[in-house]
Image (cartoon, rainbow, N blue to C red):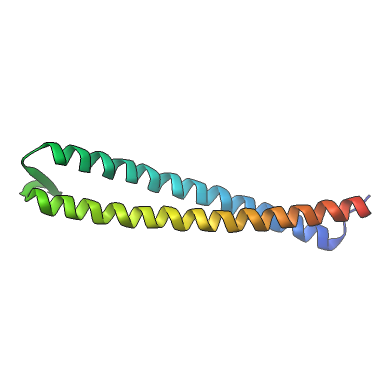
Length: 110
C-alpha cells in the first residue's frame, strides 16, 4: 500500500526533526561539559589564595575575586544556553510526536 504524498512529506519532515534533535543534543552536551569545567574551576579557585588566567600563550596572575566573577558570569551564560537548548528540544519533540501520530493515523486509515 503506497503512502500519500502528504504522508511522505511528513515522514521527511519527521526525519529532519530527528536530525535537528540529534544536533541539539550534541551541542547541549558540549555546553554541559563546559558547565562542568566552569563549576570545577570555581570550586578549585575557592580553595586557593592566588589565581591565574591564561592570555594567549602566557599565564598571568589575576585577582581571585575577578576570576570568580568572570567564571560565574560565564557559567550563567552557559546555563542560559543549556536552558534554551532544552526549550527548543522540547518544542521539536512535541512537533515530532504530533507529526508521527498524524502519519500513523493516515497509515491506519488507508
